[in-house]
Image (tube, rainbow, N blue to C red; front, side, top):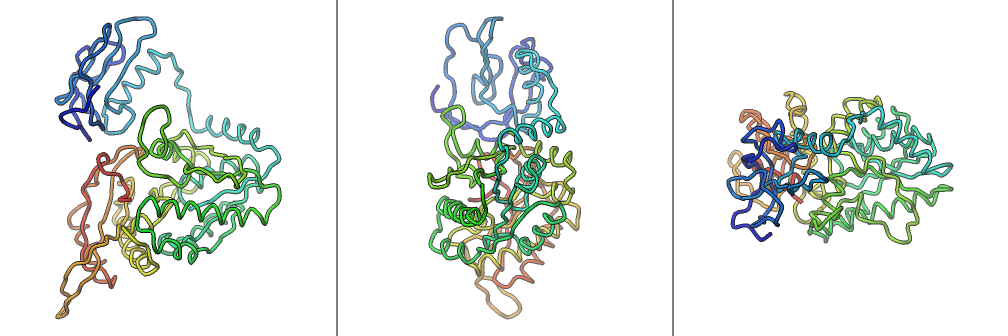
Length: 419
């Protein structure tokens, strides 16, 4: 394998060489797959054969020529939504080659997970950070089913939440019957984010401060030995090399590691689920739709939607612009059609004119993507009239912003968040 003369990121057309092979049964002769690579196989070892190619690479899928324990290899990602027949390929491999049973259901997952949590936790108490997002809420509900009020939820106002989110989320948790304490630590976060413009530095500052707050809150309680987290599989894949030489894309606050001084065992009931599976489990648990259907929101919050240095003034600016954008998506029915949407404050000022006055203010970028699992994503084709209305509403009502742009990048090669 060597570096390819042409990189493939995104959609590619795959041509199937052998439609009779068990892995490719039911797959079209020409099929769309999702690529993310800059290298290519130049020559297969003796005893192997090519099953599929693309326009750019000669080996998109291969196998060894044996009916006993065949070895398969794929260059593309069959597991993602944008590989249109990826599910068929995975089904062929799991059912017809590996002999796996198709018996996973959200209800079975809940029963098995609650039983496993009871066994893992026993009579101990768990402390857990909650964010109001889907992952942490579903994880907390599963743990609560296992141990009740021995789960101590901590919801931290880190100063980079969305507008009014701290109060609204606490009220929701109260309605769900979860044992949650709200902690206002916004000034602590502002003070340390001030001189950290680098994305990784911001993530690590926020992760470290979260841990410090947890330690303080845990110190007020007895018999706290475990830390609950809403880690899901994409967090793990992007943060650490799971089963091979993958590169860390960005540090996630859930999987960044704990200091030796924090002597807590992790409880991660969702670690091997994708976001769409987490939502199915949440619905089975009876969590309200308005919470389960919320768009993903990054753990570091608006800190990584403010490019460069984070200040309280910039946060307030972005909160207002993002509030306008999100409400407009909901009011027009577009919110449910996209996977994730958010507003990014750019470290760019430009000249504008309002009335007879010259302005020199910030630019924001609107981001909306379609996806199923978050591993790949396409930019959402929102109506021009909608974008025009949102742009006018932001510029007319948020003093400090005079320009709005729309991000039309897909993942890969871009990520959903800008930082």
